[in-house]
Amino acid sequence: MNPQAKLIFALSLTLGTTLTISSNHWIMAWTGLEINTLAILPLISKSHHPRAIEAATKYFLVQAAASTLVLFSSMTNAWHTGQWDITQLSHPTSCLILTVALAMKLGLVPFHFWFPEVLQGSSLIVGLLLSTLMKFPPITLLYLTSPSLKPSVLMTMAILSTALGGWMGLNQTQTRKILAFSSISHLGWMAIIIAYSPKLALLNFYLYTLMTAAVFLSLNSIKALKLSTLMTTWTKAPSLNAILLLTLLSLAGLPPLTGFLPKWLIIQELTKQEVALAATIIALLSLLGLFFYLRLAYCATITLPPHTTNHIKQWYNNKPTNTMVAVLTTMSLMLLPISHIILAVV
Image (cartoon, rainbow, N blue to C red; front, side):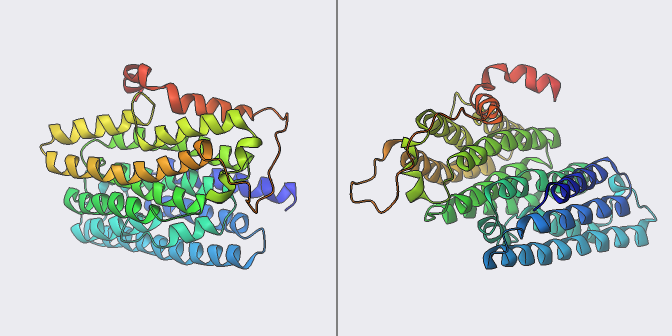
């Protein structure tokens, strides 16, 4: 793909995201979502591999259906209340349809089936965009409409997402699929808290974006698409592999790393809102995620491949680590001590 085309798609993604997060009117928000969908499709299918074409087709069909539901929900609300303002969503049917539409956009259970398949058919960089930037507009719409949405529906979706994201990630051998199920699991944490403390859900999303970007870029720099490849990358970038171990543990939410902060605050807020049972269930379900992060970390740093391995060893090179990876991994590991400053800003 030539640089001019890449620039156009990057500008379109920026425009679509900005349009959705800054609009008050449903039609403008819908337009932004459509621009985003159309801009990412060529990036998914640029390799011309059958799996990439399949991923682009699945992504288009799901996002088109979700955008239609967003439009239908806003039109139903406008029909009954005369309001096109995003924050004025008050009709119960509209609220329910919108919850379904945004769950489809994000990949929340039970509308999650497309996400691992699309991520598996994309490159790691496009996978990073799908897991972070493309989730930002729907999360913003959830944030703006959170007072109108039913907490019970969101809580059910959240607990199912955390459970299925954990269970289905256990048996995977492809790093992109593991990260897709990790994303579904993290979305569960955001969905459970958004009705009670929308700002906390956004903070969780920002920190998740930081940590996931660090993991995706690290895997991209060592070209690890499978666990078996990850076992042989210690010769290529030993220091990056060691840092990847800590970043994965941060993504799992272990103290004293950054990833512990959103989980700690969410459990605290849920307990304050007297839904301690949900907090206990979601905390226990996050242990499933911890298992596959530990498995990834184990493969990356502790396992030495046998001498009979079929993989060509990628010998150590002197190329310095990408600055972006260095900054993101540092932030993924060391933000917990300054949590009071982060909370004051948010």
